Amino acid sequence: MGWFATYIRTDTRIESLIIGMLGAVLMMKTNVVKPTFLRYASFPAVIVVVVIVLYGRADGSFMWFGGMTLFDFACLVIVLALAHQAFFASRILCWKPIAWVGVISYGLYIWQIPVFRIIQRHGEKLSNIERLVLAMSATFLLSALSWYLIERPAMRSQWGQRLAGTFRSKAQ
Image 1 (tube, rainbow, N blue to C red):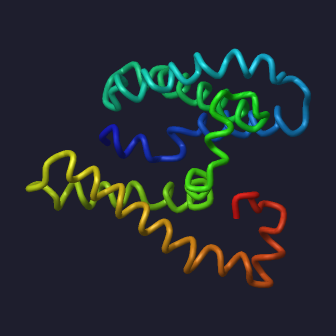
Image 2: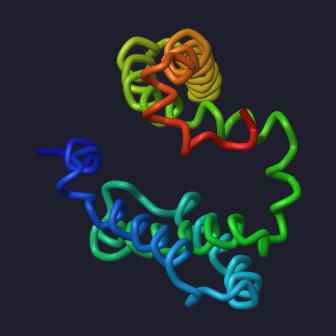
């Protein structure tokens, strides 16, 4: 099994979910995480994320022996800082176009891998930049269509109201 197949399997990356759940518990149920800590920790966390995104190799040993977990914790600090509005970029994320990306984010999560894989397989004649622009555009288009045609109508139905009523974001 290659690195990609290993990466997308939940059982090989379960720590990402657990770290996210830990963050939710820390934020919602305790007073352990202080906004002051988050204010100071968020900038180094951004540096860690940027360095790993720019230099981390998915097929390299660093990512598989702690790099992804370090990335997950850095992302957790950023998310907690945003939730506590202790992050220097919190105001930017309230901007409507950025908030809209949050609204369709589940679709982005769902559609990104199949779209990028299809374009990788069938876009050999395109340059890397053209493939990236096409893949991102298609991912956003499918995510928006999914939101407006499936997710939002389902959430507005009586069944959806009962299930999703407490999970609506302010951006919707």
